[in-house]
Image 1 (cartoon, one colour):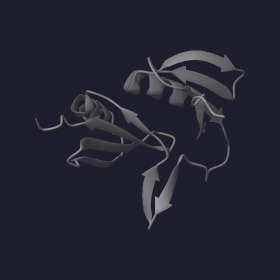
Image 2 (image 1 turned 90 degrees about the vertical axis):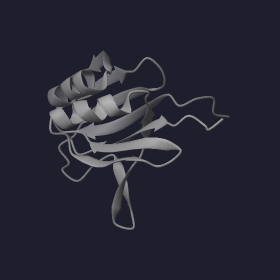
Image 3 (image 1 turned 90 degrees about the horizontal axis):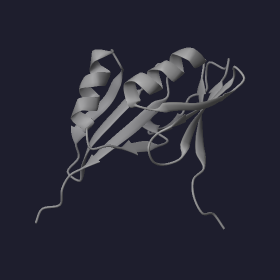
Image 4 (image 1 turned 180 degrees about the horizontal axis):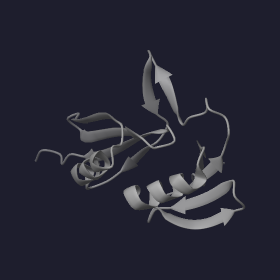
Length: 126
């Protein structure tokens, strides 16, 4: 049976721009390239992020629920307010930024049109 999540694949239209944005804005590290169409990015923990160069204009990493975009995957952080500030400074399209009680939630689009979510869990009341 399954033992872990290996990697996540997302489409990008401009590979260089995507690599630069993910490394500079989100803290990924470029671990390897496979030609011009594929790149592998890593965080300190978890599966790697695989970028696929595509020319398809209608392919994005998100889905609709009752007409609202939802991210396929969410990251975890302990610095959500700093991340929100950083993304705002580089004109990132923010879909949601709020305290949902159990966690602060940030949802944003990368320059390629993919939607991501980030959670910072609130401490449980004692």
